[in-house]
Image (cartoon, rainbow, N blue to C red; front, side, top):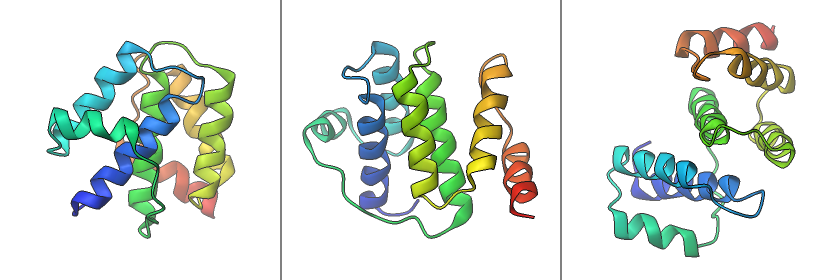
Length: 133
């Protein structure tokens, strides 16, 4: 992710997803803020994103789409509860991103079973590769 617009787009999508159940949990805000810091977006700029609409910037690289999906999945689990609306939304987002629906289901199930919902990059790639074949 190179440009400020790409970074901003990622955060906007994460913000939209985190409020799908109608509110933003404190842990979700903290997780989003950590992501903003990693992307070198200052707190003022980060807070301003909550007032902006989601732009449509396509992610062309499959690996970047997988990583983006995984970040959204981590966000979904960051508050320690899994809402039905979140589960439905993340699957729809993944499919709209052009990701394999079976791989999406496998990733989400694996995250639920993982102690801290963490999956290695190699496992992520492997699952998507297996489902592509």
